[in-house]
Each structure stands twice: as structure tokens, then as C-alpha cells.
Image (cartoon, rainbow over all chains, first blue to last red; front, side, top):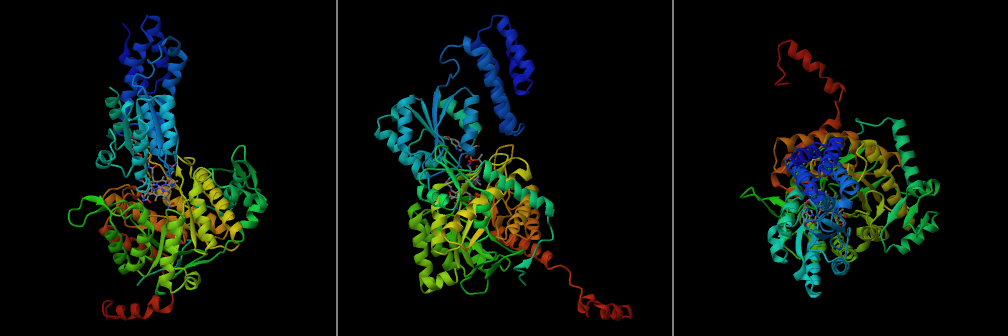
Length: 211
Length: 413
Ligand code: B1M
């Protein structure tokens, strides 16, 4: 039996050559790519998420590990994976709402979601409700993430959600909201399914909403 | 005694050669990398082409040839006066003259009764204006918080009204849109008596975040910026890159990018109105690499904000920048040292209009009444340093030494 814990721990510690070796070893021993992904690499990213929350690892290093992991997946595992294996939690359409150009927090949340196994379609900043609705139609995600950093653009979260409702798409997605001025009370008011104050809790919440 | 408008410039983190080389680097960034832009700026792009800038519409990119650029930049006035309503706190922004005051747009306040952070209200804004009006070392009132208790569409007129009603010091704020800008103009004209009086002695000014770092023109704010120029209202051209996220992690790289962004913004304003009163608004910041939060209290921010004044001074445009930021959530020891350090460095650097210097906590999210009072002290002491040590006969005090040495004492003399 392969040592998945070793893969996870070496990934979290950033020992890149060792991770490649261990993944190869596991494949040679006949482990399934899905199991290596779920119990090795994803667990490792989970450890990194925890370290980030406790400020034991800096963001550029988190990004480095996340990028390395996706290289390993693409180069070593992807051909052996089934569609859906890679993104066990499904698809998220993500945007900073219209009128708002703040994206540093959004990008951080997206990075963590991707690391945790979500496929994210990033629509960028200043995104009109119509574009968001269109993207939901086209991509059929199971979740929508909306970020707003200004008190003046918070109402655009509501407008966007109302557009989603009017388009008849509300039932097929969970809606997650966030950004510095946003809080749980506001999230409840506008009928979102969840609110998270930072990237780690957003990832936890997204996972629980996806299940 | 308030020490306002004293000459700083004692702390110059960049040598003359370094200033030259950063300036040259910024010019080459504008020529080679240029600015990207958002949709909706067609007229501005045409105007820029008329002034010799090269617009690549396929790639949505503007390139700035250095000669034409610097020709425009040289039209910006080297001195901008921001008036107070009563004439007691007029700000003569030029050279290394230093003024410090409040900065903008917090959304929470530590409640005076409970000490808990809660949403800010219009009444808070008015109360803070009253407080700042009485704090001698705070030289201007940039609206420090947002009135979260009123509808967003009514922000602009209510913000300016509350500020002008609460203090006679110079009032500055951002506006949400064109309409808000004109409502502000109506109220300020009314206060001034008429529009002409207001234009002659603008006691209000606006901020426009025209650039999204790195090197991108924001349509909405660029249009507000140009509208202010058209109406002869002084405008601070804010751009605030965070080293490590929206500009290079190195201080030099962040300074070059910030300076390039400013040169472009200043040039665009001068196309509309040669001689338009603008403030060089580069605010070099820094990201906290543990969580990407705004790390304005770092010593590097103090250093870079002194350096950016040198770059503004190099092109002879008065500057607007920041000090006194912190990620501390309450007025604690960390807040104290970060504020003292960055405010002292900005003042000693000779920055002309230093905002955020009073009241701010929690990466610009929160303000606190007591923090304004503490920061008033920090600003006063930082300006005291600028006053230097006078050594005229009276201050040499030889008689006093002589008397005391012969048996009199210092306490009575
Ligand atoms: C979907 O689910 C989720 C779940 C969690 C989610 C989520 C979504 N989205 C975020 N989260 C959460 O997770 C993230 C990671 O932990 C966190 O994201 P955050 O984004 O909160 O945190 C980031 C990692 C770091 N934080 C940031 O990146 C934001 C920092 C501050 C300083 C800030 C910045 C950097 C900027 N700004 Co702006 N800016 C401020 C900010 C003050 C602050 N402390 O928030 C704020 C938000 N800005 C403000 C203002 C006023 C403005 N800004 C403006 C512009 C800018 C810059 C372009 C200069 C720059 C943005 C650069 C960029 N590429 O994003 C202008 C508006 C432009 C526009 N139309 O959007 C302008 C209007 C300034 C002007 N006068 O023109 C204030 C808002 C006031 C209000 N009315 O609400 C402000 C609080 C600062 C202040 N006190 O003045 C969580 O919130």
C-alpha cells in the first residue's frame, strides 16, 4: 500500500522532487490516479490551507504549491483520471460585481478554491449581472461566488442575485458572497446561501455547500 | 502651537542620481509597456492621440512618447493652494512644505460607549468633523468615514454637507459619479456665495482613483478626474499599488511603477486644461504576504512615501500620499509605533498633503475617536521635528547659563 500521508506532507512542505517520486511510486504500485489525487495531493493542499489560516506559510508559497500541484496533476495523473475526478466539488462561476474593481481578495479566494478541487470560471472585475447570468447558462456551475469591496457596490450583489432569480437559474446554484464590507446579516438579507470572511473559511463553506 | 506648512525634506531616502534613474525608468515603462484601458474612454483616447500619444486599439494600450509626455507634465502648477473656509488653515502645497490630516472612507468606528466596532453613520462623520476642527495639528479634513445609514445614491451631497457643516478646514472626498460631483459643486458654491467665489478659493477638492495598478486606466474614475479639471476643482490623482500584489515586491520597482502611473495621469489632466491644479497622488503601499492585507504601517511604506515625494518634487508637482496606517484593530502599542514611524518619515520627507495620518485603524476599515486625538499628538510632534533647533542668541541662552552658574536657577529664568 502506498503512503499517501507522505505525499500530502511532502507537498505541504514544498518538497517538489520527493512529491513527484512518491506519486510515480504510487502509480507503479498500481494505485488509482483518483486515490493519489484525493488522499495525497488534495489532503496536502488541505494542510497548506490550514497553515495559511494560522499564518505559518506566506501567500506566494501557497501559490507556488498550488501551481506545482496542478503541474503534477496535469503531467502525471490527468490522462488516468475520469471527467469529474479532478473537480470533485464541481464548478464555480466567480466575479467582482459591476462597478467594483477590487480583485485581490477575490483572486485569493479563487486560488484556494482551485487548490481544494473546484473548477473556477473567473469572470474578473466590474461584471454586469447579465454577463454573470449568461455565464451560468453557458457553464452550468453548481455555485456562484460574488465579491464586493465597496458599500456602494454591495447593492449590486442583490441586483445580481435578483437577475439570477428572474432568469430561473437560482435553484440550480448555491450563492456565496464576501468582501470586506459584507457580513452574514447582509448575506441573509439578499438571500445568499453563505458568507465567508476570508479565503480559508470561504473554501470550507464552499465545500460544505457543494455536498 | 500648530506647526503647519513647515519645510520637510530632512529625510531623503533617494540620492539625486537615484531620483534621475527612477524617473528615467518610469519614462521607459510608459513608452514600452504603456497603459491598458477599460471600455468607454473613446473621447479621451482621441484627445490623447491629438497630443501625440500612441493608441493601439487592437491591444487596448496607450503608449506615451517621453517628450510629448513631459511637455504636458511641465504644464502642471508647482504650487496648489487648498483653501479653508475661514482662511485660518489654507494649505500652500509646494516644495517640501508639509501638511497632514485625515484620510478616507472607513466603514466602521469603535463605538464610544461600547468600544465595539460598528457601522459608521452620517452623524459619526459630522462628529468627527467637529473633533478634527478642534484638533490643531490636523490640517485638513478628508472625509474619514462613509455614512452607512443612508442610501448610497445620497452619499455625495450628504458627505460634503456634513463635512462643510462640521469644520472650516479644507474638505476633500471622493465622489461616486458625475451627478455626485455636480451636487458637491452646488453645495460648495452655495457655501461660497457663488461658483466664481468657489473657483477663486476652492475649499473643497476631490480624489479620483484614475489608475488601477498596474498601469490600467479606470474609465469611471478617469471621467470624474477630468470633470473636476474642467470645473477647476483641484483633484488628487490617487493610485495605490500594493508591493507584492499590484506592483513589484521591491521598493524600487513599486516606486517606478507608481511614478509612471502618476506621469500619465498628470499628462492627461493637462491635455484638458493646461495648468490644471492636480496633486501627484502616488501612494506606494505594501501587501502583507501572510494574508494579502494592506500593510500600510510597515517601515517600507514610510520609506517609500518619503521617496515618492522626491519623485513628485522632481517633476515639480505637489504630492498627496499616506502615513499613519496600521493593521492594528484598536489603538494599541502596534498602532502607536506604526503611526509614529510612518508619519514622522512622511513629514521628514517633505510630503505636501499627507492623508490617513489621523484616525485610521484596521487597514482603513475602522476609525476611532480616541485615535484622532492620539494621532493629533503624533502629527504635532512630527512637525515639531521639522521646526528644527533654533540657535539665535536668545535660544543659545548664554545669559541664562551665566546666571545659573552664579547661583540663580533655570526654573525661574
Ligand atoms: C464569494 O465569496 C467570497 C468569500 C470571501 C471573500 C470574497 C468572496 N471576496 C473577498 N473575500 C474575503 O476573502 C478575501 C481573502 O481573505 C478577503 O478579501 P479582501 O479584499 O477583503 O482582502 C484582500 C486580501 C486585501 N484587501 C484589499 O485588496 C483591499 C484593500 C484596500 C486598501 C483597497 C484597495 C487595495 C484598492 N482600492 Co479601494 N481599497 C479598500 C481596501 C481597504 C480594505 N482593508 O479592505 C477600500 C475597499 N476601497 C475603498 C474606496 C473608497 C475605493 N477604492 C478604490 C480603488 C482601489 C484600488 C484600485 C486603489 C485598490 C484595488 C486594487 C485591486 N486590484 O483590487 C476606489 C473604487 C474603485 C472601484 N470602482 O472599485 C475607491 C472608491 C477610492 C476612490 N476614492 O476612488 C474603501 C471603501 C469604502 C466604501 N465605500 O465601502 C476602502 C475600505 C478603503 C478606504 N477606507 O478608503 C475577504 O474579504
